[in-house]
Length: 306
Image 1: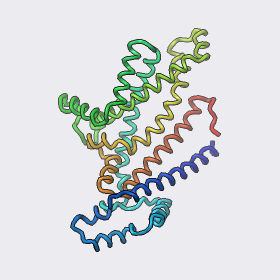
Image 2: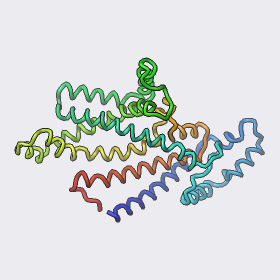
Image 3: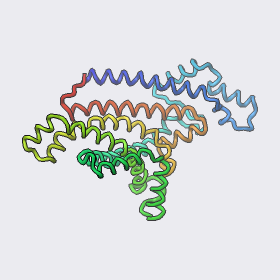
Image 4: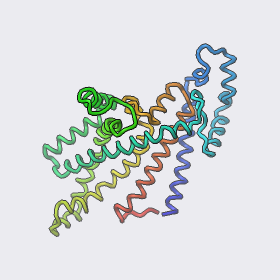
């Protein structure tokens, strides 16, 4: 196990360096000029050039990236061009809100998606199965902003059950988490149904049935631990996606997470913040996948980490 973890951490470091290089290169090639955003439209050419030199943006790409990489290896994500604050501090201030929403959203999509997938698999070919798969398809296909606005309209405006937006109490968390959960549940239900159907066909399930074990015990003790393995891998990916990819939901509900921070930075070409959020999201994906791999042997002892 220690050798496996060390090897994965080394691979993760290489992945993060690759992500930083690709992201930095794409931002370098952008036609938008961050210096113009800082100086303003009325700034003179000399002022723009002075700011460019102060920020080191007049240097070649290799020099700029090497300077950023050496700072990154020291734990420095840089300083925001426009907010004049350290990127680490800006992200740290938004991180608790994103983590809270991520945990709640993953919990919602697992409860909804796994329940739908198991029921559909147990009633394969029935009207219930077909209806649940139609619902999951709608959940997967529906745009994020449509689901979020519908949730706001019905549960905040019409019924007044939850606040329209904001952050601070569990009532503020419900609608954003459920909105994300509905969309993610579609993927989980389809994956769970497929995996469960495949497991229920295995010989060990028929053996358990022949021994007279109760259907619930077979489902929970034998089928579910084997069928849930692909779901664990999906959760590892979702951790990173929710950390930086829920911009729409955060914007609709006014949720102060790093996704909203990234969107604001993109609008203003604030490169250090964009780089910082991208790397944090990449770290979350790497850590999520590593945790998923480490949990898998506890669910299925046949799997060995080497």
